[in-house]
Structure formats: structure tokens, C-alpha cells
Amino acid sequence: MAPSRSPLTRPSIVAAMTELLGPQAVETGDEQLKEASVDRFKKYTAVHGIFDGPIPAAIVYPSSTAEVAAVLRFAEQNLVNVVPRTGRTATEGGLETVVEDSLVVDGSRMNAITSIDPVDMMATVQGGVRLQHLEDTLRAQGLTTGHSPQSKPLAQLGGLVATRSIGQFSTLYGGIEDLVVGLEAVFPDGTVTRIKNVPRRAAGPDIRHIVIGSEGALCFITEVTVKLFRYQPENNRYFGFLVDEFSDGVDALRELITAGYRPSVCRLYSPEDARQHFAAFYQGRNVVVLVAEGPKRIADATADAIEELFADRGHERVDSGLIQDWFENLNWGQDKIDAEKADMLEHSRLGYTTEVSVDWSRTSELFEAVMSRIRREFPRVGDLTMLGAHSSHSYQTGTNLYVVYDYTINSSPREEIEVYHKPLNAIIVEEALRAGGSMVHHHGIGKYRTPWVRQEHGSAYYLLSGLKHAFDPRGVMNAGTIFPLEPRESAGQP
Ligand SMILES: Cc1cc2nc3c(=O)[nH]c(=O)nc-3n(C[C@H](O)[C@H](O)[C@H](O)COP(=O)(O)OP(=O)(O)OC[C@H]3O[C@@H](n4cnc5c(N)ncnc54)[C@H](O)[C@@H]3O)c2cc1C
Image (tube, rainbow, N blue to C red; front, side, top):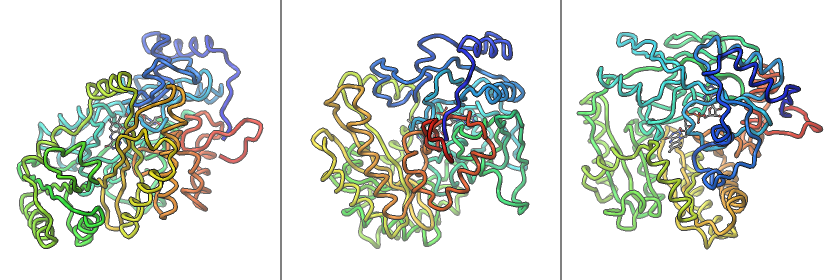
């Protein structure tokens, strides 16, 4: 879809926002606007203070659904591009403001926990509630959402739903799509939609999925209701195993999952990736990490199955205390993000990831194809300081592959994305699609993976593009996200 072009000037957009929301809800400081023009994490140019893209007109902080509706209605009427944001942990360019004078609509002041219902096992929260805050509140009451992405300290419910996020315990609890019961969202014409909370229904297609994963390109999520589970960490059983071949690890995980067991954590690290996490004990081998949890009898039964299966396969067991310690320090808060940025600046290096998914039968083949093609074809292969992968979310039919790569940057900061990230990302995405898998498992398409969105969906792209036509007909929602940006002259179908 072609980007919208507003006839309004920047001062008139700012004046209108100030009138709608009040001055305390409109940010126009230079530094804040520059930082709001990009994803704040791993943007190598931004770390060097380089902001080449369009800078938004303002960041606005609505404090109610009605205010979100008023802002979106104004934006649609005046063709102002809107970039929704909450926790700002996006990694795929979803927060980049690619249109001049965009409005960044920040939902983080809508941060109330509306209700916690321990009978019907649901919590309803505004979209700006940090997941960590919700989890801390729930755990104090013996409850949990079961959702634990590594970005939990920062990410907020609106963004977590908008990106179809997934957490470390997903093999037991599922991704956010399995956890959302109902939600409220505002569409660009100002329509407020509440999808009601029911255990299940067969009243037409599941309309929650129009919103879940929409990445700010269709609507603004203002409220979310998620399922709750009992929090009983006292039953957790931790396991680690050393495995000689990556394919042996894949086979073991497949056997465990397809036999019907659901460990909450189910991970396999290639030796290169394992070295960053388990240097003290990995011995140059692949590492499998598993956690059994839930009611004691279920956790114990899962633990028994894990012990038996890995013993039968002859894989060496690691002290479970080491795995528990590692696991408890896995999440990323602002301190780790700041430390990584300082490291990027000081040492001219960057670590990045591309996560894809694929059926069990093609997982090892995809791993080998990606590793060998990068080593063979990537022109700057000599600058790679680490190339590995892990599988961290498993399903009855397959798993995800999270390719991780670190490199030293021997180019100007501006060239980093073209010289390093884009070619590496392209190889991984292309190989995933070639293997019949998905080009993106959980970070969203953002703006960086749009070149492949049609290939990803094939004939079903008809359904996806129909949503954009139906719900954002004037193209004001997060231009360039999910749907490739096209020049105005050649604007065709989204
Ligand atoms: C260190 C780190 C670890 C991560 N670990 C994980 C992980 O384990 N699992 C995982 O799935 N992801 C992970 N991510 C990616 C990211 O954190 C998640 O995708 C998260 O869901 C984004 O939430 P957020 O609140 O930060 O959203 P933001 O970064 O603010 O926004 C993300 C996208 O959602 C849109 N959006 C935000 N709020 C709204 C709203 N209210 N309505 C509509 N659209 C909205 C934005 O326009 C943007 O496209 C990680 C990222 C980092 C930096």
C-alpha cells in the first residue's frame, strides 16, 4: 500500500493533538522524536546518534480509549500516519516512522489492571500494562499468565498481542494467541470494538485473530483479557542434557512432544549458541534444556518421561541446578539493553537473530542449509564472530529455529544494515521458505521482512491484504509494517 500523505503541516498536527489531549500528553522534544523514529533496540545507526529516516511530528500519550479513538479519527481524516507503541522492544522495524510527520501513539499511560478473576481464571488489563507488573501482581496471588517472553520486564500487553509474541514456557501454555480470551481495539475511523470473553465460540471465524499479530497496521489495542493458571514453581523440575549431533537433539525433542508430553521449556542449542549460555559445562556439544511444571503429579510424570527418554538415547545429563540458575537470569530489562548498546558502540559489533519455524522432518535440514549457506555465500563471513541456532518453542508438528549471529562491523554505521543484517536475514528467511516453513516465528514482520510477505502467504495473501483494505482503507496505520510500502505512483493492492 502507498503511504498516506497529510496535507497538514507539522505545527498544525501538533496543535490539533494539544487541543485533543492537552499539552502534558504531547511530546515534541528533538531527542525524543528522533528516538521515536526507530526501534530502540539494536539499531546500530541510532546507537551512533544517526537518524536518517523521517522524524515524527509528535509522540502522544492518550489516557483513555476515547482519546485513542479521537486521535485515530483525526489521523484518518487528515491522512496522518500513526505508529502505535507500548513497551518499545520491537526488533523488526515495527516502530520506524517511515512517513514524514507521523504520530507516534504511545499507549503506556493506559496501564491499569482492570480485574483479576480467580474463579473464571482471567485478568483484564489496559494495553499499557507491563507484563512484568501483571505477573508480579498475579504471582503474589498464586496465579500466572504463563506468558514469559525474554522482554517481559519491558514489553506491555498491547505490543505483546500486536506482535503475536511467545514466551519461554510456550510448549505448555502456548503463545499469546492461545492466552488471549478477548480484547478491545480502536480502528482508524474511531470505531471501538470489544471482542467479548467466552471460553470458546463457533459464531463465525475467530475475530480475535484479526487483531492478534496486526502490529499496529490495522488498529490500536487498548485492553486485553488473558487466561490465568495456578503458579506453582515448587513443582518445577529442571533438566539439561549434552547431545552430540544437532539432529539427535531435534529427534529427542520430537519424540518427547509427539508422545504427548508438554514440558513448559523445551530448548535445543547448537554448540556455537550453547557456548554463549553454558560455557562452563557444554563441552563443545549441543545442549538440551527442559523444564517440567504444573500440578505436582503432572510435573513428575513429565519429568519421568524426560529422564527415561534421554537415558534411553544415551545423552549425558547436566546438574539441574546449573540449568535453574541460568534460566532465572534469562530475561532482559533496560539494564541489559543499555549494556549491549554500550558494547556495540565501544567494540563496533552487533548480535542479531532471525527466528523461523518449520516442520519436524525439515528442522535439521534447515539448520544445516542456513549454516552452510551463510558460511559459503555471506561476503563478510570473516567478520562473523558467532553463528549458531536454537530451537525454543515446540509443537506437535514442528518447532522454531532461532538463528543467532554476532559480527564485527568493518563498515560505516550507516552501511551496517545493508552489509550485514539484510543479507544474513535474507538467507535465513529464504531457506525457511524453501523448506516450507514460516519466515517469522514470533518477532512479527515489522518492516524488515515485508519483502517476503507475499511468498510467505501465497494464495492466502488475498485474505491478509483484504484486512488492510477493510480496516485501514486510507492507509494511515503504521505504513510499511506487514504490508510492503509502495511508491505512490505505482500504488496498487496492499
Ligand atoms: C531483549 C528482547 C527480548 C525479546 N524476547 C522476546 C520473546 O521472548 N518473545 C517474543 O515474542 N518477542 C520477544 N521480543 C520482541 C518484542 O519484545 C515483543 O515482540 C513484544 O511483544 C513487543 O511488545 P512491546 O510492548 O515492547 O511493543 P512495541 O515494541 O512498542 O511495539 C511492537 C509492535 O506492536 C505495535 N504495537 C505496540 N503497541 C500497540 C498497541 N497498543 N496497539 C496496536 N499495535 C501496537 C507497534 O506498532 C509495533 O509494530 C524481544 C525483544 C527484545 C528487545
